[in-house]
Structure formats: C-alpha cells, structure tokens
Length: 363
Ligand code: SF4
Image: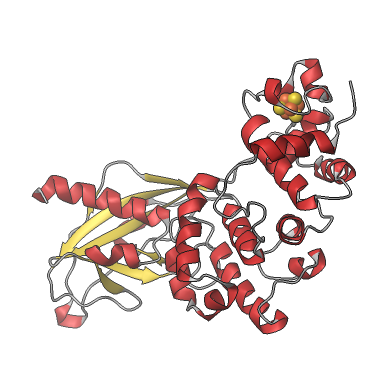
C-alpha cells in the first residue's frame, strides 16, 4: 500500500469538484464574506438545506457591511427554519465586529478569525484556507471520516479527534491549501460517504488502510452516545375568531433565544400533564376574566435538540375577536406567520393545531 498523495486528491478535485453556490470557480476571486456565510450556515446543516438560505441572505445583504447594518430581528427572521439560532445571533455579532474592529474586511489570520463570534477552530481554519489560501487544515465530521479510514484509526471518536487532526495536518500540501481543504470536504461528501463509500472511484483507494482491510464502513470507530433525558411539556395554540394566533418572544439568551413561540409550559423531565390547566394562558381580569376551553390534540409533537429530545402536547382554544393578549404575548395574523422568526419546532406545533381546526370547521 502506498502513502496517500495530496497531488492525487487535488487532481481528482480539479475534475470532480462540486459546483456550490458559494464556491468561486477559477478565475473568480474568492469572497471571504461568502465563504464565512456559507461555513456558518453549513455548521450542522446540509448543503441542500443551506443553499436557499444562502441565496436569500446574499440577496438581502450582499456584503458584511449590509449584514452588520441589518436589525437582529430581520436576521433571525431570515434564519428561521435553519435551526441552532445562536448561530444567527453570532453571525450578526460577527458581522458587526468585522465592520467595527477590522474596517469591514475579514482578517486574514486563523487566530484573528477564531476571535470573532461564532467562529470556532474548524470554521476559522476553513475560512483561512478557502478564502485566503493560508496553510490551515479544517477537520469536520466528513474529513474525520476520510482520515479515520485512510489510516484505519482504531481509537474511537470523540477521543480520536486530536489524532485525526494531526494526521490531516500532516497530509496538507505546501500549496493549494484552500483547494486541498475543499477536496477533502468533497471526497467525504460524495465518495467516502458514511454508508457504502464508493471506494472504486476514490483517488486514494490504493493507499487506504480501511479499504485494504475491506472494512471501510467500520471507521471511524465511535464510543456509544448517551442521549440527553427526554423532556416534555405542553404548548398552547390560541386562535382568535379573526384568525390571529397568540405568540410571544423567547428571552434573548438561551435555547431558541429571541425566537417567536406560542405559550408553553416549562419543558422538564418530570412534566405532569395534570398541571396543564394551571399553566394555560388566562384572558381578561377581574369581572372581565374569561376562561378559554382547551382541547388537547391527540399524540405529541416530537423534536430533537442537540442535547435532548422533546415531546410537546398541543392544546388548542378559540377566543372572540376582541380578546386582549395577556401580558408578555401578542396577536399575530396567521397569514403573517411566515414573517415571524418561528423555529421549526413551533411550525410543527402550529401545524398540528391547524390540522385539528381543519377537521373541526372544514377550513
Ligand atoms: S478508499 Fe474508500 S474508505 Fe478509503 S478514503 Fe477512499 S472512499 Fe474512503
């Protein structure tokens, strides 16, 4: 078995590189803003899911100055549906820092990039290599997989990460750093896939230890993952007679910070459905107090966050048109929901409630 040659991978990349909306094709100049925007969007999101968001962001905010000048609310709305909303807040903070601290130009140094909001070691290395052709080696999940197979690394993830980074750095050639990083990404995404890798088409198949053993899919080895405990709660979808829904804004910090939601109970591991009536929104006060009639939708809405899975029961109620919104909430026309920063969990909750309505009144 020969040593893996970077030149073989680069030659493959020259013929088979993916056409991606954010990727400059020679002789186009690479725009650091586009590289940064795409890398932030691609953190825990697929190319297919990120592409329309990337196009929308670029149409709204074609450069970092435009994005820095945008209100955070607008950025969160444009991000809604991509998930991991802390990324959108960091994206905005980063754009402002680039304008305020670096005169609107992304710094051409891995360390200076890593000092900006939302740019971790991987993203800093990716931007440094792709946008500035600096000798940096980004190592994400795709690249970890390629390297673990190439050298049949026996140590399981996540403890193998430092070793995989060391091996990837040792492979990085003396020139074409950006192309090499993108070639590794493309190889992991299109050939060295998690299941059924296309080893016959791989430019490194003559130097790959896992392939030589006939057990490519067995790498990378993994330590079994312990999932966070299931949390449960209830969500309250209140529909006013003129088709407005009751919404509120989550606190700026923390999970889904600053996003729009329907009122809910706390989400806890020991949630007790018997406590729901006491937690439901109340309307009016004193003699003008009115009690909504709640109906529970069958089943639950399931969602998986990074650290825990969640199940929400959905309760629906209908109230008259002149019902004031309780403190801390507001009415939003159902027709305007698309313009709200509504995370996908809440889209599922509203969809579940509306399903019921269509069954109940035929609308
Ligand atoms: S030969 Fe197969 S397992 Fe090895 S790097 Fe190539 S695609 Fe991955």
